[in-house]
Image 1 (cartoon, rainbow, N blue to C red):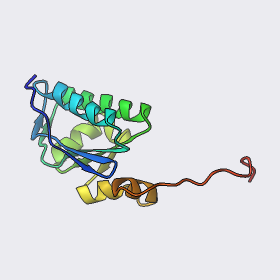
Image 2 (cartoon, rainbow, N blue to C red):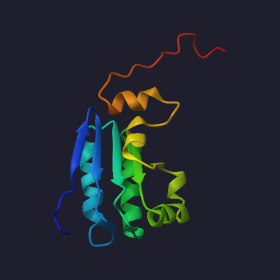
Image 3 (cartoon, rainbow, N blue to C red):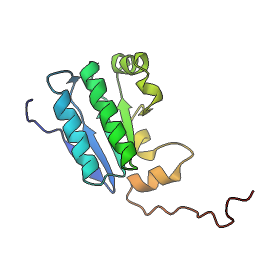
Length: 139
């Protein structure tokens, strides 16, 4: 393990981790540790920025999945920014593209799903309020 940490940019409660050009057995543990560290710091939204990543092997995929599982357990959201067809293909072949939310750009990832203002508010540091179910679930 190289011990090198990857850059993290905090935007409100969203954290963007810029990942390297290649994620493989030599650095996947560090990638996982850095992503988990950000989640441990209370990120509501974790954006793994892989727009410059051109190669990701099974160790890299495993690091992403393990980070996603931790995000789920801590009720955080994890989003990926994928810029290269090669990485998108690896995630597609492994089925990870159905597990994780993948965005074509950082702007799209920070905005979140089109039907979710909550993701955008969290990413921009706003307060998110949810509507309480006041009628006991009756339709």
